[in-house]
Length: 259
Image (cartoon, rainbow, N blue to C red):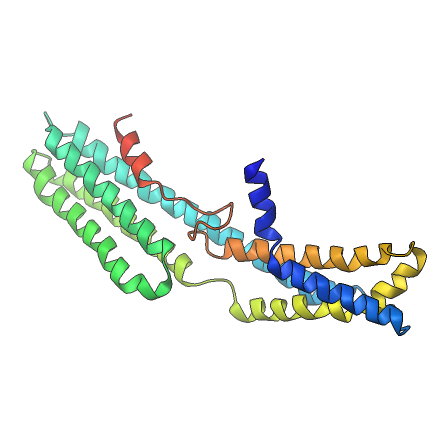
């Protein structure tokens, strides 16, 4: 029940209340002064609904791509751990523990980078590549020292290379969002159209009982602002604000390595 309420309040916020009050006030004034008009609803579909749905679709695809690349980092990291555990004869517990620490540190550094603002990216990115460098040294010295053949060490380096490629892909998803001009365009019309449609709400309220005519401006506002809030939460899949964000659980990944 608590999670359901949290989901509702993520899409119904102060912006919803303010615009709904403006739409109700506009409808009341138009009704008082006899301003009635049958505005076309295609304007709302063209100016608001279509751009928002387009943005939601784009943000959702970015989230799915981020999940794919995150899975690639974990899969190849697990492959490096399995190589350290299963390929050499008699791998020491210290070597396996070092592999866990390095892989866990890499995911933690990624989590810190993606959870913070873009302003902190240069410093956080250095920490991520520092972990990649330590993993490279681990493959070069520790695994080779355990007697792995050069071909097997080369394969581990290929795993590491694929992890770096996946990280760069996620980093670009984190850096670059859906078109900002399209977002600004939608924000303007979401704020302006519900109050401007006051004469239309008065027009359709003629067939309703007194007071029921104010339901339509509220519904219009809730639908439009909720769609905009959904897109906003999908925009950054790493900020841990929305219900559908990508969660980088480094601790769980490390614990699962021995399974």
